[in-house]
Length: 84
Image 1 (cartoon, one colour):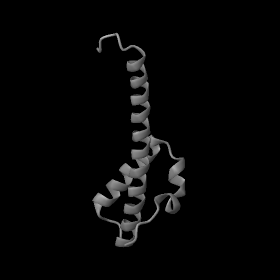
Image 2 (image 1 turned 90 degrees about the horizontal axis):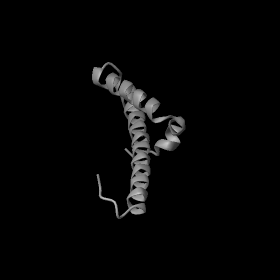
Image 3 (image 1 turned 180 degrees about the vertical axis):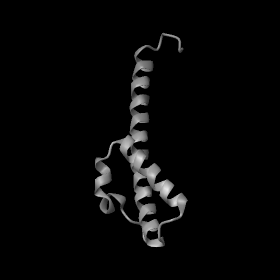
Image 4 (image 1 turned 135 degrees about the vertical axis):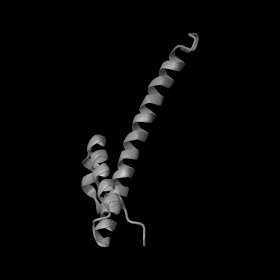
């Protein structure tokens, strides 16, 4: 199966907050684990879940980068003070 661009396939995901995307992903995982959906529906859920997971990872990476910038800026602003 060819790689699918999640942004093109699920453009609504880009607008989701982290918490909303995570909650939807949890719901998808529960549906897939229950094994009650037909194969075609399961594959659709899987693709959406992958796109949601990537979206959540972007949020987490952005938050981590922001924290590193903030703590790095603080650490370089006061190099003479001992680390806590």
